[in-house]
Image (cartoon, rainbow, N blue to C red; front, side, top):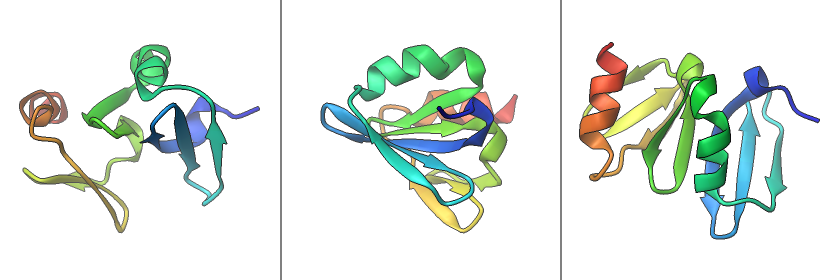
Length: 90
C-alpha cells in the first residue's frame, strides 16, 4: 500500500512502472505509464516525458529541458514540452 502524497515520480519500464517515493524507496508495478497517468492525473501528476510522470507538488524547479525534484533532473520530452511549461506557469 502506498499513499499518493509519498510518490515523487514514476518511470516507465515497458509494461511495468517503477514508482519512486520521496523517502528513497521504490518498487516495480505491473502497469503501463499511460494507465498510471489516467489514475493519477486528477491527483496533481503531470506527464513530462513518454517515460516519466511527476508529482507537481515535488517539483522544485524547471527549465526548458527538465524538471527538478531536489537534485534530481527529469527530462521534458519534446512532445510534452509546451503543455508542461504551460502547466508549470499556472
